[in-house]
Length: 131
Image (cartoon, rainbow, N blue to C red; front, side):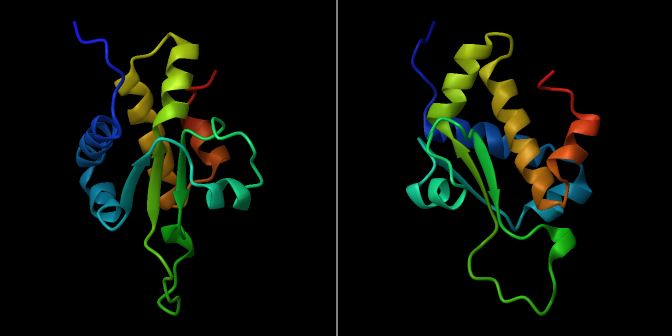
């Protein structure tokens, strides 16, 4: 049995498989979103979110939701879904009630839902994951 922690590449593979399994209407919209997996959130993201704890974020959608995009907008960066390896590993170990794949899949879908214009409150109405 392999007891090594998943790498950033392992997490990216889970996330890409998750995106590939979305219904076609969402899969097409997700194709334009960059996917980045790093050990921790970059300092500028933590600063912009006024967050001092690098373990506080397991994932993040960074971009303009499709429901707010305009043809008049000039993008300054690609829409990006970020996944953060060390916070994901920490949450998985603390929870102890889900597989690592299930956690990464959940966070990936949650962050892509933000790309499609869903708020945390919208997501919570159909996703009782955290209860």
